[in-house]
Length: 327
Image 1 (cartoon, rainbow, N blue to C red):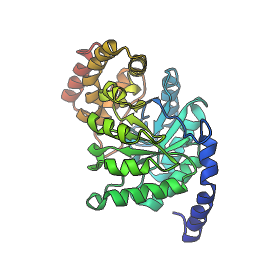
Image 2: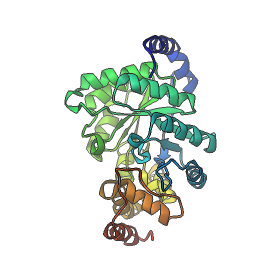
Image 3: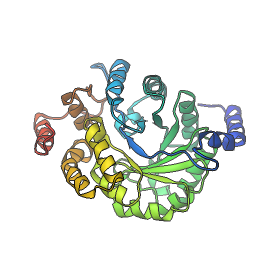
Image 4: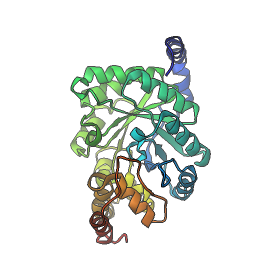
């Protein structure tokens, strides 16, 4: 943790340099960075003794790098970041930056429960190569996480972050939806460039797109299961767990939506719904890692307390992919 004097120095120094940092990221005068595209949320491989397997991480990234992704999300929910130490979180981001192509964006999950810890982690992740910070809602005291509290939290983080900030709402894990009114207020911040919404409520996604239309603010769908609907309502991309195993297909769905080939997009979307549910809400990270093993990547074990799938769950997982023609 940073001491009080160092914290004060960081706060003052980053506040003075914020406009310079944001302009350095701009794609045009006064315009925020463009985050449009598909991102796989990279898993964290572990050895049989629960150590981070950096060699397998690099192998997975080399394979994922063959697809036309906009970039990678590291230390999101699928990266098991709550189970990693602070040093492990930073080392994973550093290793990914070293391996991934320079023209890809690295979005690093830097969220912590306190505002101060989140700022510290965000600054550190910028130092090890993150291009933007994806900041999940603090949730341990969710009963007190009002719009005002969340606006204050994200504003402080964005004020002090040397890289752009992406809001992250994942109510299935946090029990907390980032309120629409808070998103609208935060969209006006010069260092907040967009949002990943994993809630699955496409009417909410459409409303956020509509209410932030006058801002330079972009929305990413948080799952492949509602990717087509999100594109139709104005989202610009997605952070999709399914892209870790069906990367070509998720990118194909993106192309079909962008070229307005809605009939073909609908057919493909239908075939992705069950597999996507299997590696997200149904079987979660253990299911995703098992599918990665089956598709030629390294999934491996999860870190405790997460447990591997039972034989019955494995069979159900396989059926969700087989019945849709993917296995």
